[in-house]
Length: 309
Image 1 (cartoon, one colour):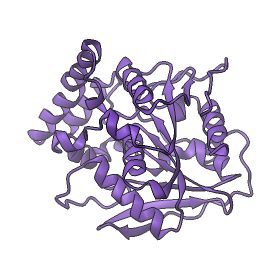
Image 2 (cartoon, rainbow, N blue to C red):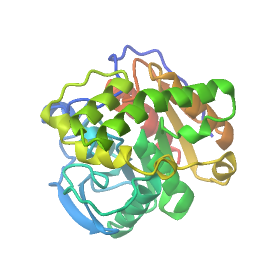
Image 3 (cartoon, one colour):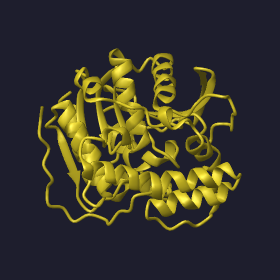
Image 4 (tube, rainbow, N blue to C red):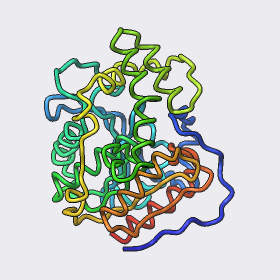
């Protein structure tokens, strides 16, 4: 596997949470092509739910982007036009995430559920096998897809999946895991349990070290975040073991932001150890939302990896 090193670039300073969607003119990013036609937003029924999606580009191997928590298909605006020059690009909103209709379907929020949704979507749109690029919980979903449906996947790019059960090997890792639960997940869960959705959103953002304005964009995510925070913890944070990961034969690129919280660096280190993986990249000047913190560098790294797989 190819080892991707961190080049010295001047990059935008990035945080770890959702960024406002860029204006259409800025979404294309460096090197975009006016020939890349963005088709209108569509929706389709798969696996018992309705998913909104866009398909961009008319040729090349498929690349599918999977967003994280507090996100939707527009999280990838800084990637779409660049990748569509050489690939067919799919962006979609996962179950419970806007603009999908709020649906109380009695399903447990888990990477397995979202992986099954994505598998059904890939088959319906005839896009398999595809390169799957995930951010945060979307990376968790991408990894589970590769484990459970390897025939649908060419390669996976994992941007700091929050696989907290991996942090059980050393006292230092266990302390990071416990702190994440105590400072992020538990306060948010408690607020949603008392039906305080705004408080739950703010607790989640504060725990991630972010400002917590209750603006309309962030408030639109409270339905899905409630599903996340109140989910069965053992399913929401599905326990993947080194033995599970060792059975994966799909190419994996692990991507991290140099300014991301230590807990995500620790998870990526465990993933690299379990996968025996030397395909890693660090995005300079970037936090957990590295795709928006430094999109030019991120796009370069991911395009280079995809081209060799």
